[in-house]
Length: 486
Image: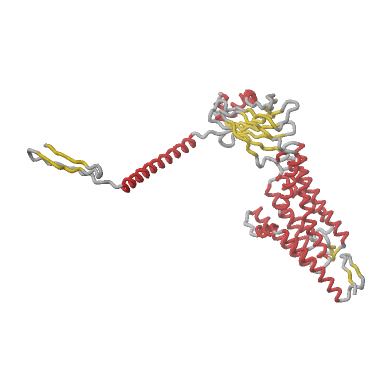
């Protein structure tokens, strides 16, 4: 059999020009069709899409495998919390027992309490050996492990160490190198998170620690620099906190304002009578505000120092009760002449609520005193602002016949809000009136403007009414300064 073929280079088409055979032979001839450029481009696109899909699913599979691997081998980390005092730095270490056992090379997890009692002294020496702060010029700080405690209430179990670091003479506590390798010198996968928990000079307090960085097997030192802080910065922070606490604490302000509603009036039996005079009103207002200040300042100090702590729920309920009692008194005299004692007594309750806001700020006697002073001054400043912008209008209104409905309306509003808070805090019922109170508090400027406008209109109406009735003699000037001259 013999065959001859010609191939055209352009179309790659096979042409059989001569074929000889001596016998019958079945033959299959394949002819390759010409392929256009667009077809080749489409084939390349399809091939690329297949490769992309394969790569995508391979990546997803690898990610899932890594996630499952991390979940199966989750390594608990350590935490380091720094507290900056004036002459030293306190450190709280939280060390997971599972990781500590690997580096300490003694069994700790099988029976933590027994192992802790047996190795207490050795554990202190071990922790102290691997906490080595230094000044920038290489001088070592003194380190003392003051206390060790086990945390076995929840997994993972931890050893909590209290460490005190003191710089050498003449060195600053604000700038140093924190060398640390308690577990990470042995366990390569272990990570240590370092944060500032308390630093008055940079306004960092325990409620919101500031992360500084991480330490692990290859990085065992962290440069600490807190030199940008100052005492005034911390004081300004707690002062502003006191301002905000009163501005946002509508229940505290509402108690004071409702208690002040009948202050300009004289009690006549079981009813509120006429205006008691400008001097008496101002003196009564001063006594009530001062009594409330003394009361809450006393329990603020006691609570912040940790000498007295009450659960938050009963304190919040009693605050709502104080508003309700003041509202009832504003409608009908209940303890006329004894408002000062009521303000001081309920001020003690409000002070306990104030103390919760700064419970973690006073981490030393010096900073505790600064915190209480700054926070209390912030509270008093906001109280004075509120009193200064509302009381003059209440005194003007108290001189008119329009004050009784204003007083009763304010008392009803305060009493309704108090009942809503009592139900919410005692029975956990929804309090729809809370949204109304918060909305009005956000528009305090307009409320004061409305109150002032009402007072001016009421005074003008009363003056013109008396003028029309010839009740004001010629050339008369009353206590408000209004003149009448024809």
